[in-house]
Length: 396
Image (cartoon, rainbow, N blue to C red; front, top):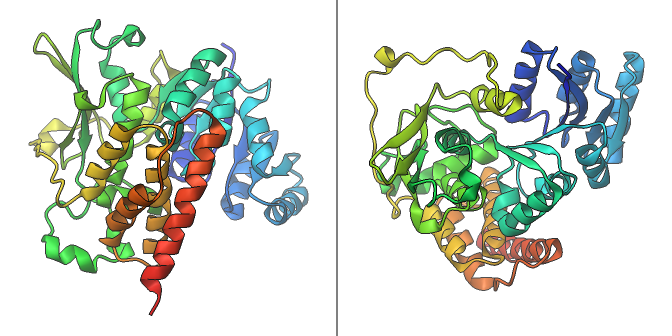
């Protein structure tokens, strides 16, 4: 059995760390070719010591020089690169078979799109690639012959619950609806009036999942679920009106597919990202992920609720952006990234996140998603608008 050669885009984040944990268990199957991080030099150095990649990539030259010096001192012969061009090179390298796309936010779009064009096997954890440029990304993946395997727990669950030939169309496969489950985050039952006082620490304290700060806030606002709705629309070629969100506080059922014959298929498991990562890495086989078996007797009950769009306006905004089409989802995503960063820096209140996104969607006109430049231009315009609005909010 030949080993897969992996490039990890976002190796120091929660997905990257979990991916390396699965790789560690199956070194006979996987070889790490490149590790790519944003700025966590200490963690990347430790990963390089253990996995000895051919290349390591960081955001800028100063960080790369620091890592290079440390690796030389440890006699590790990993070549260190920096910048977006290096990320693209690692995502498209001829020796790479598989790319884990786990860079958070819009920064992951360019290298992930490059991997699609190069026809790589892509383990897709960066939802923004499909949120910002879904139609373009899927067209490039088809043209390049890329294999897309979803890593988001919800989309991986849907993938597992669909027939293997679902690409011929969901209707011919008898699919009626896709049901995306959501935990509801830490404020599902909080009094609405209390949300005005939410702190970054409270928003990042997810009841079920261990995640990075940005995605934790997205879960608290349910924007994460809105982005997943947009992602599912393109990944499974499913019309928005056939994608429903179901609040499921236990996070045991990761998503469901409803069929016209009355069957509903679901994928269940403990809330641990190593399960979908292992599934995508080994597909169509199965390997041990290190996750404990699901104990239904301990769980005892499963609850379901309709999402409260008044409590979670960000979810409604995501559906609205999807309906508008074109570059509206890219504008939505950019505004959300600015808003979440401002909230985490205490420059914007929690309830200001949705208000800022709504204002940006109204203030920045959406155009056609004809090219990557169109998408990136819309992203830049939305960021400028949102940043100015944040500064206006913070002004005395």
